[in-house]
Image (cartoon, rainbow over the protein chains, first blue to last red):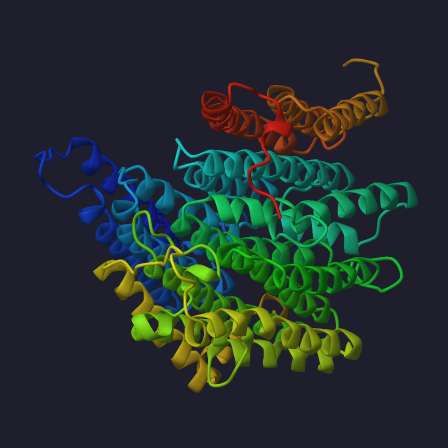
Length: 502
Length: 103
């Protein structure tokens, strides 16, 4: 019995143990003064740990979570199902790529301290707990484990005003959101007497009295607000551009991909298991109109503001807000088309993970110490000076814009088709119009790279040399291309993993 | 068994939570903001423990409040460290001093 429990939660254990091991080796390692910094070993160790976590999750996927005897022993605190395993793979991929980017970025920018990697691993472990949480208790523990690591990573450049300010803003709003979420959770416990998400949902379906329904609505509002903060939906997005811009770029990439995916996993679980009853999912009394409004606001506002940025990193931050809006359209479609909508959301998160991590990675590769690529002007003429770097950056931007044959195209296509299937024609049209709007600022980067010459005497970005960053970009590029050329197998995996099918 | 009815506890918790939320939105001192968040989490704890008196079949509410206390402590540690780093750079703990990152 006991060893089968270890088997069932193997991906989480592999990542956590790898993190502990790396932390200890870093503490007791002795380095000669002229040796390379800690990044030289830790980045590869972290990547291998994440890879092992992803492979273990895939192995459990092949075995089938229903065949795992130990899976029932950890329920409802950790639910081991295909949904969990799919997100384990996505999160390990996002964390592994962030580790490789850090391996190039930290030494280049004189930030080479070993703490970054254990923080990254434990954040990923927290995100994995969050994606598998089936109880308010484990949900909160996972959420905070993930967030505390990320707060520290955002403020990693302690001497920098921008980095510290980003950490302050992210920490304050993140903890505020967590408190809102927990108060909503406590009210749910009060109404139903359960802390397991499935138990709460069953008690709500069985019917509650009218006074209890008032408390339930209040808790739904609190939980939706908390979730909207975490996925950075407008108007709860104020922290996102600041935190993304001030953080060291590998931490930004981790926040944009892993933290956001885990937050959407939490959102899906909460909305489907807890608020899945007919009253809560109706357009008159439930969450769909609220989420639809959030989706429209998020897409439109983020795209309009993103076009006016002068910093590429800040533009990418707003672009990540806009992508959250596209995913929210899929969340609204859940009510009518549970299986395909959820499959399309999960496929979107996978394709978004590789495209965004790639774009931030390309931005890292474009700059070197003292010559970081920040604004559009920094990138002027890059296509002539460094064609390979410009080419790969353009490739990821095209995927974010949703051009075929990239992963981003099919991600958007599936979300649009599932929302049309659910009868949400207005939302689908708004999504398409928004992606046209978004193409403007993605193509603007390419315009600067290929069609502009740097102004005389202006500082130009000099690409750095790093095998780690190149390896990360290669992984992302292959994944974007594979998902763009053969999307069906990963889409059917995502639909297999959909919670709502069961 | 005390004779205090449950709704008094819940009202007190709601009041604490509102004080915390309003304080968070209105005050400009980072340390006060940290305390407001702690106040909100304590309101959550009080709600959980009070509701546990209604749901006597298990101790889920009380158990959860222990975990929230522990996590709130970890959160305060990280938060104070970040505020300290901010104070070292700015010689101030006012949140309106954080204005380097802007549109």
